[in-house]
Amino acid sequence: MPRSLVLERKGELSLRDIPLDMDMGPTDVRIRVHTVGICGSDVHYYTHGKIGPFVVNEPMVLGHEASGVVIEVGAQVRHLKEGDRVCMEPGIPDPASRAAKLGIYNVDPAVTFWATPPVHGCLTPQVVHPAAYTYKLPDNVSFAEGAMVEPFAIGMQAALRARIQPGDVGMVLGAGPIGMMTALAALAGGCAKVLVADLAQRKLDIIGAYPGIETINIRDIPAADAIAEATEGWGADVVFECSGAAPAVLGLPQLVRPGGTAVLVGMPVDPVPMDIVGLQAKELRLETVFRYANVYDRAIALIGTGKVDLKPLISLSMPFEDSIAAFERAAEGRETDVKMQIEMPS
Image (tube, rainbow, N blue to C red; front, side):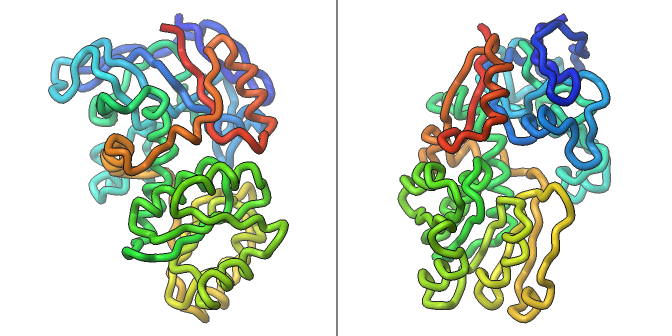
């Protein structure tokens, strides 16, 4: 049995052996896991024991942002071989489902997603994964960057849902990891500039170091005043709500230009109020994001060509034996931490 990071129950983690299904099919690959990022959802399961209807009722291996090395391939796999450096898309849909046939497999009710109860995650030495959702990394992309593809894919999904036009002015509410990823994806997608609003100045300093990003500390100036000043009162072409905060959702109509777009990326813990008339009065288009679909190749290409540099967002890498301490630190929510990662033993 592999030694893994196990969430035993709310608030309790352990490093221990746990039985996992490691059987391979002809279209699967076996991967030695190298690097795993700590996601906000992992931390939320640790601190709250649930996210919406997904409840931790039995021990579960955490982790879903991963890279590694292929060590075995199924008989029908052609595009991968032993020794390939890869990252893995953690959601596995039913290819025969109606959602998958429509190209929106991320909302397939039958999808199994790493570290979403009752599915085990990847903070374990090896995983077996469908080759179709395993992607070879370019030689110049590190394992650490490979493990960043998963959160960046959410930003990519948001940018695609926004239907950005070249030269658009974008705005992101929330400078957490997903907010930062969304801002970079929006720039790569064609925005001339992106304004990022948050309360945490240290996080704003990190994302503000990127060319094309302007920051707004909403302790100093309301987001609506800042975007009005930046656009001569017109508003942003597209606003990405990445905080999940109820006041931010309610205030969206004040930020978007007439006929513009608001994209809901952050996930509020509870239902929040929304200004429907405010949205209607400007005929705003409202888009929503749930994970991602068909974007991993694009995300890897942007990282591989240097169009998007995610390295400055990797705050800390800790060895697997210190995984519990890493999660305890992640739960603190330090302003200087963006993405923390765990490196598995070789």
